Each structure stands twice: as structure tokens, then as C-alpha cells.
Length: 158
Length: 158
Image 1 (cartoon, chains in turn cyan, brown):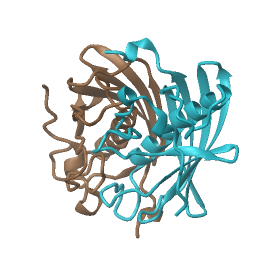
Image 2 (cartoon, one colour):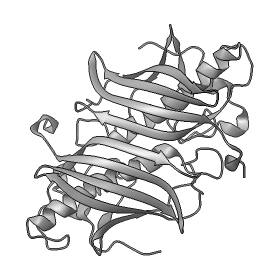
Image 3 (tube, chains in turn orange, purple):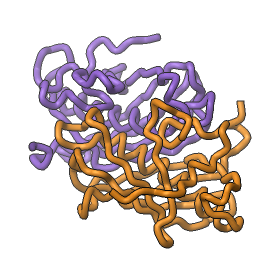
């Protein structure tokens, strides 16, 4: 299984690294990791046994979570690059939150296989980025998604 | 906190009751329960401590999961009623899967509060139902969603 060497989530400031989906400091969470793969973004994740929809197939809510964090991570990667940085360079990354999430479930997603979420990210405003996502199980395109992510607003500060 | 007395998930056949989101037989899952509340559908869930986005706020992927299973559950409730049955009557319920899921995140969703997902369900084809969902934390509308659910096709049989 291919690995993400330098993930954008490694660069989130500690206080914003507790996300259940992708926070490296959330031990109960999925700890999705998102990096560049050429000009696409990539998150690789093998669902756990309990992430069942119908036995044998992956739960759609887990796929939605994967698409969600892949989208915020992709937006962060893209803005970080625009700012002149790459993950691994030790610069704190921008942190995005999700404005909207859409997932089309195309085929039942088999369990027991690593999933690759592949993203194409584009700027629609300096603080608002769109990621189109394809989720593959092996060679099979199982889901397509779209995430609109925005730079984290101050309303997320407690 | 209001409770769902008769949930449609109680009526899913055992073999289709393992969903990570709403399967009563998935001990690691959320075990969402969806019932009628007048002519609306209702799922009540209090996220766990670990379901964090940014500390203090609920993870968007958990909200997507809630909307997802609320949508399939609402579709099952509606078709079950069309077939002359209510949850609690002991008749096996139809089982839906998600064709598409959309969530708009309107406001940060506070942790430590029970969430109410309220659905309006309509038939768009005998095997395809749409549920519009509003997710409230107390009186605050935090997210809106839409789920297109279809009667489980044979491709989900292993």
C-alpha cells in the first residue's frame, strides 16, 4: 500500500489537530493523512472491520468522512503551496473547515481493501477552495464527491 | 431528552442491522434510531467526546453520518407506512441504501448537546425517496442536508 510521507495534517497547529477524521492528536479517530501526489491530492485509508454498511461493504458515512477531511486537507495543501510551503517544511498550515459536502455513491464499496481518495483542488476565492474527489477501491471508482472548504472562521474559537 | 420509542432500525432484518451508523447489532457504531414525529422523521443523538472537529465543536463527518442514516431510515419509515406498517408492529422493514448525500454546514455545532435531525421525506419513485434534513443543536439550526435513498439493490448481497 502506497504511503503518504508528508501529510498536511502533520502541520496543523496542535490546537487544531483533534479532528475525529484527520486529527493526529485524536486517538479515537481515523487519523486520515492527505498529501500531494503530483498535482492531485491523495488520502489512503483502509476502513476497519466495524465500518460496515451491509456486511461486506463499507459504511457510506465513513466514505463521507473520508471525502470531508480529504477536502479540507486538500484545500489546506493548496493554500499552503500558494503561500510557498510544502508539508514537511515545518511551516504551520492553514486550517480549513467544511462549508458543504456532497457524495454520490456509485457502487458498493468492498471492505478489506485500502481506499484511495484522489482530489483535484481549485481556488474559488482566496479563503474558499473546492475539491473534487474520487474514491477508488483498487481500480473501481466507488464514490465521487465535492467539498467546499473555507479558512476556519473565528466562530470556531471557543 | 426526547426518546425514539419505535425506531425503524429495530425492524431491519438481522442481516441488514450491522450498519456502523444505525445498525442495532453494530456494538462499535453510533446506533442512530429514527422514528416518526408527526409527519416528520426524527433521529436524536448526542455526539461523543471524541467526535471533535475543532475542540468544542462537532465533527462534520459525524453530522454527515447522522444525515446519511437519518435519510435511509426516513425512506424506510415512509415506504413501510406506504405498505401499511409502522415501526413496532413487528413487520420487517424495507432497507434502503444511500445514492447521494449532501450537507451544508451552516454554523459550528456545539459539543455536549443532543442533536435532533428532523426529516421531511417524499417519494420520487417507488424505490427512490428523498429526505430533506435539518440538524438542530437545541434551537440552533446547524446543518441542512439532503439524502437520496434507494431500495437496497442486489449488488449489496455478498
